[in-house]
Image 1 (cartoon, helix red, strand yellow):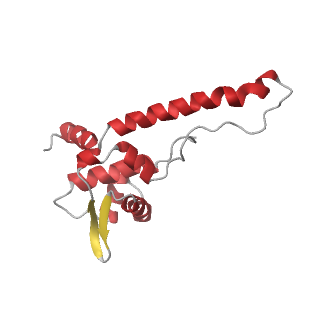
Image 2: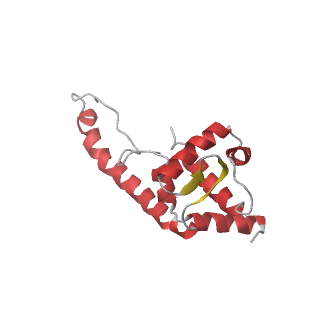
Image 3: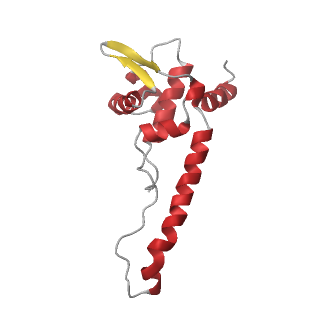
Length: 144
């Protein structure tokens, strides 16, 4: 099982809104780039809106960024789209056999490892911004 694709789609949406800022970023337009249904885009845009990362106006097509690129971290997107709850990226299986020496200790042995791994990943996400993503795309596309 992997982290929900809502995370990568959320980053995709925000980057495309920025790169297309002279145009109108409708859910249909964004869905064409993500190669998904506009309803999926609208759901994720709703999550990004609730996190105050995008602005949308009822009855007016398109979305725009609510913050500067440099003020939106990948961790902000990660949290906005509800990828996982705090300290729950990795889960330990329930009810190991307490009669087994491994079963007796596996949970309390690997839970701290899993917590440390999640915290390390989140630290990396906090250190990267949407500006980093957009600059990399712009460089690769030779735009800007």
